[in-house]
Structure formats: structure tokens, C-alpha cells
Amino acid sequence: MGNIAQKLPLPPFTMETALQKVQLAEDAWNSQDPERIASAYTIDTQWRNRTEFINGREEVVAFLKQKWQKELNYKLKKELWGFRENRMAVRFEYEYQDNSGQWFRAYGNENWEFDGNGLMQKRYASINDLAIDPKDRKFI
Image (tube, rainbow, N blue to C red):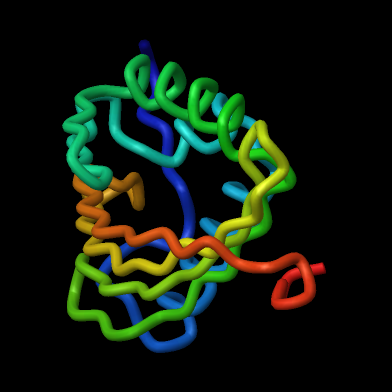
């Protein structure tokens, strides 16, 4: 493939670059563009998302396409919880509607590990969903 892709900022992270990395991830996920999101991960990335195990960019793209067929009007907010060298802990919440029109807020934590090129090689996400009333939405 020639040149190896890099996704700035690169590890080891500082507070400034860790915050930047989290914001870039939030922006990418809110785009709901599976190809854009997958480009931030290594070719052989390993994910655990709830109870699903996803391996490699191709599976990431397929997973995300399926996700946004079920999670409509998606809006996400991420927050850095902690970091060290090439790893981060992030908390997040997002809201979405299902196909019946029911709103949900999902809460979770992610553990991230990056390679030397700033690509995420591991993503472990624990997520819980809560049905909410439309009047209780935060992300409008």
C-alpha cells in the first residue's frame, strides 16, 4: 500500500493531544460516515461493542452501516476520562431513535489503544441503553 496512513495526533499523548483525539473521534462518529470512521482504525483493528466482536476495518464499516439503520437521529458526546502513553479511557453518551420512534440515551465507556501512527488498534466499549421521553433529550 506504499505509505502507511497516520492519524494525528500521535502517541504518546499529552492532555492537549488526548483531548484533541477525543474530539476528532466525536466529530467522526457524528458524521455517521462509516468509511471516514473506519479510516481512523488499523486495518486489523479489534473491537468489542456490547456483546459483538468486530475485527478489521471491513467489519467496522459493515457494523456501522447496520448500526445507523437501527439508530436514527444519532447524536454523540464523548469525554476524556484518562490517558497514558498510547491508551485512553473515554466516557460517552448518545441519543437515537429506533424505527418505532422511541428515543433512547446510551451511556458507556470505551478503552482505546493506538498504534504508533495514531490509528486505533483496539476499542472496547461497554454500553447501556435507556428509553427516554422526547422531552428528556439532551442533544437537540
